[in-house]
Image (cartoon, rainbow, N blue to C red; front, side, top):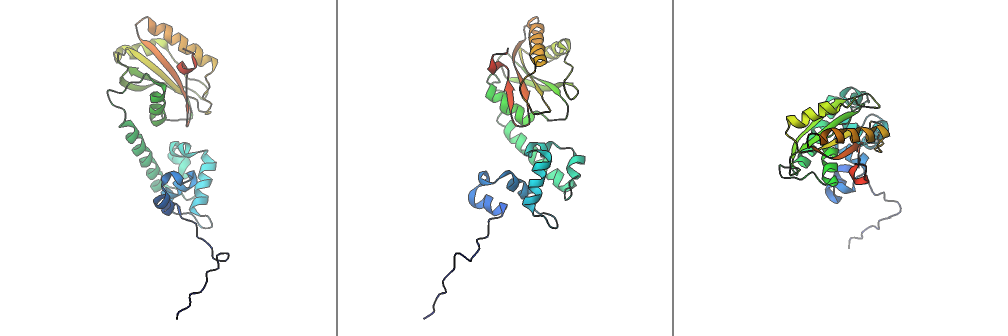
Length: 231
């Protein structure tokens, strides 16, 4: 009779699942940020595992969205990264954006902050300087056009009410939602943000265009001024 040797559970090491194996067996939501990045990176470097490389990327850039938003030069400045991995990340980002945007159609109403929040997080391009944009809507609050209107310095964008009025007339908009980013990541509106919003509202009232909201956009969250009774 064949005798089976006992397994010493204290000695036998259990090999941890690699990110791809973990994704297949347990689902993508169980992966950490570093493990998700490791799936795209595929391999590490000499003396550095792919997870360690992923963690280094997260620490260097500050998060997944900042990695994807990094310029080609900044991305490739990290040892082990290059054109192939940069294009992979950019393609993945664009796929996600298009998948999200398929949920927005000509009948989507942009009168709910949650809808605008989702749209902006998917579409507002993060840069090292402020950008001021507008979502131009028709009388049913359906999106006519999302457009960047002004570029500014690191602390502010020069916003001209007359120019915005011209854009509203150009798109025949009945309402508009403004959005601009804070490169610092702090989405709390400044006093100048509040003042320019009131000034824009007063100007656009003259041409019967409603200002529904003004969003401050960060890397992973937004702030709705209308939701905080600031409009």
